[in-house]
Every structure is written in structure tokens, then in C-alpha cells.
Length: 317
Image 1 (tube, rainbow, N blue to C red):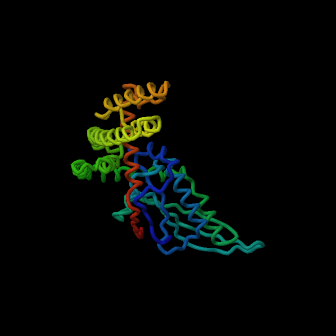
Image 2: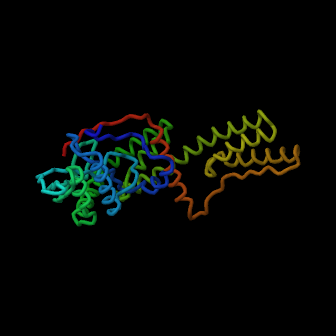
Image 3: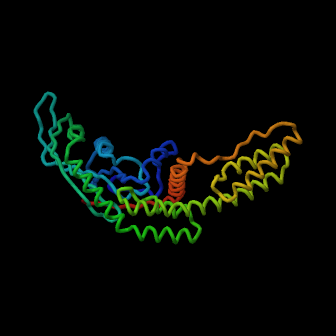
């Protein structure tokens, strides 16, 4: 599979990495890829090169987990010459050209590229290639220029697609596919200032419709759980569902009333307080941040729940 660039429609990172993903939403984030169409790079050397690409991305502020895997920072190695150095021990010396790209993997388009020449020496060709990779200076000014041009091109792409993204989100909203609509709007990076602001503003009413709809569904389910068992077990089951109702949902007030009914029933039957608390609204200054954070979680959850469709994109850059 190495000879193909593989992009999963799902985010494959575990839930333990999701907090990083939430922070990455709204930024230009590039996925590290090694271009090796002829399967010539040994696995160990490929792993080293991926590590260098991630270090470069981190140093340039473009690392993380992206909602879309189409934009990549990639590298390939061209071996210019190989020399055998007499021993003992006998060594191999490689003169390499390492070419770096930023581009669109799905459209198969290069946005920016640069290259460096590195020499590596090792006891075999694999070790010599690893040596050449390890000699890459991640703080080389060439990478800053590469990143800047690449980010500008990605911003241009999204600015050109802005109305299309918004129209698609509007269509999904009309189909009550609120999580899909939010996902579309969340893909816009903040470097596209006007489009990003428009999309963040468009998320607000969609998110409100989503939590209102879900609140109604959850409230009906909570009532059914309580009605089926008017005891502590029913209270516990209903409480777990009520706890998922967003404070900004139109069902929140009725959820509070149901909570009070349950509390009084438990107190009357068992002479003890029902230990349960509804979600509460954040402080006013944090409401907007909380809403965006919740929308980000919706986008991530939607992305993770998509069918495991894999796109194979053989790239020869």
C-alpha cells in the first residue's frame, strides 16, 4: 500500500486525541505524506521522513489533525549518486535531493515546492538514507517560504469555494442534516477571514435548530423512561437522558419541570433528595466560545461516523 497515498474519510485518531482536533478546527492544518510511487524508500527511512515533515509542520504552525485530508505537506527523495567508502567498516554515501511540496492531494495539484540537497552516510543504503533525512534542518528558511505560499494558495481555494460551501450547508440544513451542515462550514480555515466569519455566523442558527430538535427527542425519551418506572431506577434512566439536553434548547425549561416532578416523587416515596443537576449555561462571556466548541465536537463526531470510504490518490509530483 505504500505506493499509494491513502486518505481515510474518517478521522482515524482515537478519542484521546480529539482535544487537539478541536483546537485545530479553523486553522490551516496539513497532513504529512511521503511520496514514493515506486516503493523505493525503506519503511524505517519513510518513518523518519514523516517525522521530519511533522516537525516542520509543527515549527511552522500547521501541524495537527485536519477535518479534511486533502491538503498535504509532502516530500520525496531523489538519490543523485551512491558511493562506496572503503572500510573497515565499508560505508555507503548517498547524495540526495529532498523535494518538499504543499498541495491538494485530491485535485492532484502542487501549490508550492522547494528542495534541499543532503548527504548521508551509513553502513548500508537504508542507514545512509536515514542519515540524509536526519540532516534536514527543520528551521531552514526555505520551509517558512514554502508554508507561506502554500497557506495562501489554500486560502485562495477556500475563498473561491466559500459560496459553494455555504450553499451546500444550506441544503443539508434544509434536509435536517444539521451535523453534516456544521461539518461543511467548520472546514473553512480562519486565514480566509471574511468567509470564516460568514461560516461561523451561519453555524449559530443551524446549531440552534439541531439542539432544539435533539432536545425534543431526548425529552420524549426521558418522559417515557420515567413513566415506565416511577421509582429510583426510572429516575436514574430519565436523568441520564435529561442530562444531554442543551441549556439553549427550547426543551430545556420543560426538562427542568420534569426534573422537579421526579425529585418530588423520589422525596415523597423514599424521603431522600434526588441527586441530579441539569446542564447550566456558561457565563455570558463564554457562551460564544462554548457554542463553537460544541459545534466543533459535532463536526468531529459527524466525520468519524461516516462510512469508511477510502480515497486512493496516486500522486507523482
